Each structure stands twice: as C-alpha cells, then as structure tokens.
Length: 130
View 1: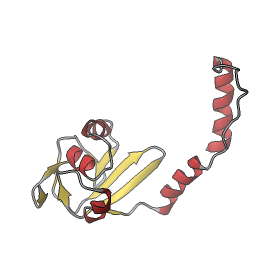
View 2: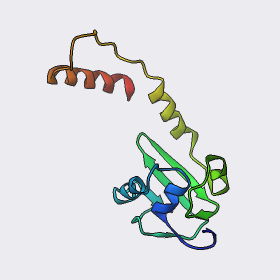
View 3: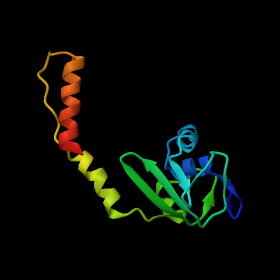
View 4: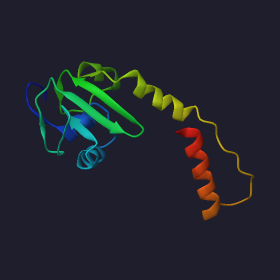
C-alpha cells in the first residue's frame, strides 16, 4: 500500500514509527497534537502526500515534509523515504536540555515524598528546567 493511494493519518503515523501503536497515534490526533498544513485533523483523515506534518510531543514540536505514503509499518532505515525532517534546531535543542538536566538526590530509605515535599520539588524543577 505505497504510492498514490490515500492513507489514514493514524495508520501513517504508526507506519513511519512516529508512534508505537495506532491507538497512540489516534489519541494524539484527537488531542489536537497532529497538524497537517497547520490544521488539526481527525485520526480518520486521509493523507494525499506532499504535505507538512506537525507532531507535538511535549516539550518538542516536530515538523516533517511527507515525501511518500505507506500503510504498512516500515523499518527505521526506510523512514527517510517517506518523511523529511524539517524540525527547526531550536526545537531539537529543547530535547537535549531536558535530557542533560541534573538528577535530584533523595536519601535512601526516606520513602515517597509527602505532598509538601512534592510541591517543593516541583518549584525547584520550575526554576532550573524552564
């Protein structure tokens, strides 16, 4: 099922490995995290090809140009045949910042944080990670 045949967006997102399952892809569409040419779409919408696909996976917003269509899951090495990554560098940097953040240390055996401690931790994260 490759070529010029229209493909459902949820199936395409799964096929090009942007989502692990079609259910996750459909949920992202329903939440408005998937945009085609800056328009929010339903999971059943058909793709015709040569469109701009925007995928919001917080904290990063990925942008792709669709080069080809497929309804069958493809290997990771074949994904560039169907998608061209045009995500701005500023968005990719956001991903690096979150992964390079320092890890908070908690004394072993102290148990789960209380509600008050959790609020303190969240405030601390807001200061250092935003």
